[in-house]
Image (cartoon, rainbow, N blue to C red; front, side, top):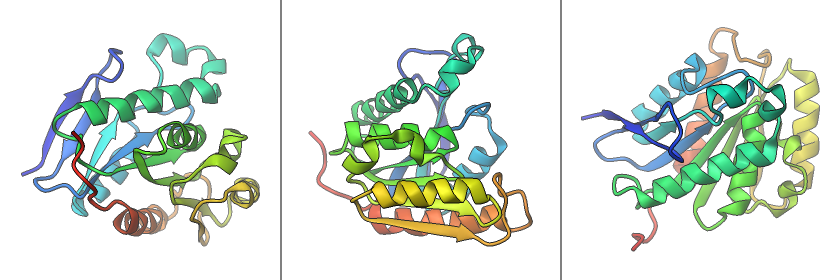
Length: 215
């Protein structure tokens, strides 16, 4: 039986959404991009897709409503990364999720936040996936990233594709670049988002594996 409950990350409002299948294989924490939120149709669609693969998901807002009104915060990668670290720490402290291997799923600027958090909590993060993301904004964290990382980009999103290739060249972890042919930045073309999520599902299936139970 699938259950969706509220998750109070860092004491901020509104709370996030934790969705868990009966026997989860792992937990995927989402990092949305600029102008998005926990209610993003694409992220919710992605969470539902991963749920069918038996992965739990945590969707939450990286910024409060007041913070989001200041556009500087939307591109403040250290701040966004710190919020992702809070979510990872929350997952490790919550009895429902503490034993699960953790994957991060970032879109747009959220991809950089996910990478920064994966470096900060390298012992906790088993895999990272970026969908149409800006990993280049993670800066020096790219070279320190240890978690296996998949970068998914639309073939027609040429500027972002070039930025992802440059970012991948700076990574020393297990990495891969998946290009969805014919897709633009938001993967709005028929079947494009499903292709991106299939690649993400395979990546999490490979790297989100049960480890020792945390005390």
